[in-house]
Image (cartoon, rainbow, N blue to C red):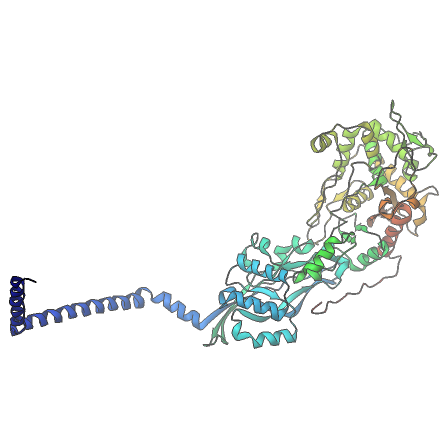
Length: 627
């Protein structure tokens, strides 16, 4: 530093010292600092005053509501699901009291940790836990979600011990769906199951608050809106730890409607027992109203397995069962109707003028299309000789109906059979119904891009080839035949009776001609089902539905074939003949003979329904908690 700079700094320091010692200058600095501090304090006070006014005036309603919510809580009261009864007032779908664990995601402190604890305590498998996480992910955070039902005393005790660490978990009493007749009515009544992600996307979540179950199949699904009901609400006052102190307000839930079916449980039991070990279906209908009195599909399953969510192991067992117990053989499965189609074919021939009921026709051992060497063989090796319409139906003469089908052609056949109700859904109040198939050249071109051949018309005339029906359609066809053209939509719930337009023919005598042929099937010495003749008069028609086609130069020998290659046995019939009260359709898979296997099943059903068999009681198989 230079001497000049040092002298300058010395002068500045002496000037600064003189100002500090100047009392007037010091008072000015003090006043400035006090003013600045006062200004800052005023600004802070103004901000605090504004904030207090904002919270107490503008936000008063909001914080009052929050305070009230801390003091009160609104709880959802789920509705009681409507019960399902049979025609005799027997409960076929009931509700029983149970305890269940449920979780409210919004109330959890650590959702991941609480789910892990629940898995250990309740022994949830990985699939169940994954499903639970999915329902939490796609559900609403404030809705309770079912974790496990039918809690044991030990499980409830463990959850009580761990309650401080399971903030979002509670044990609640609830009503659980049970099916006391188990397999007997599984396909018709259906079952409920846990609400899953797919269900959440299609339902109104507000209407399902507090509800854990929804109809998945059968009547449970078809009438879900009626059975479910509407939830209620309860406002309660709680203390600091959340315990209920007082109930302030209750809006009761609206219970679901009870449903009464047309089914008769004892008749259902008789039909199932008569079918025995055969897979297949039995449908019994009141032809005068369309009411379904029995609808059996075998094999079956226990619907109670699905209520709380079926385990992966049990579900795979059902899916991989070669007998396919989940498959409804009454309304979903389709089969060739075989010779049971012949009465309808006869009506078509009469209506279109291709038949004279009294004209004799020589039915040899086979039929040939002119110019074609192929033999369409009759089931009787040497044929039937000279037969009229009545005899052709009575003896189930294939050659007679081969000739009729060839002369009529596929288009008139398709038109008449479709108008009769075949090849389309009956409209029964159940989900999953198949339409079956009445083939046509247009259909074949569209689906297979192939032409129609005359030989396909020939075999369609005896219900083979592409022709497919459901057992329910066969029952409805039988009812129409029993009522000479009057028809009703098949129905299961008592409020849904629905008459459809009658089938009008050129002459009422056509119905009598065909019905008498069906009468002789049972009551003539030459009838194919004469062995089931009863104290009352039955009319019917036997049939066999081919599983595979026998080669031209081969013969069908059931003894040399595996069981799975045997023909299906089919029978349709109604009784009493002069005043029909019941129409029955039976299909026994691989039963071989319609007369030997299917017809006796129908006879047992008719016997019971008409009072010719002692009344029996079908016992409930009550479900124990934890089953």
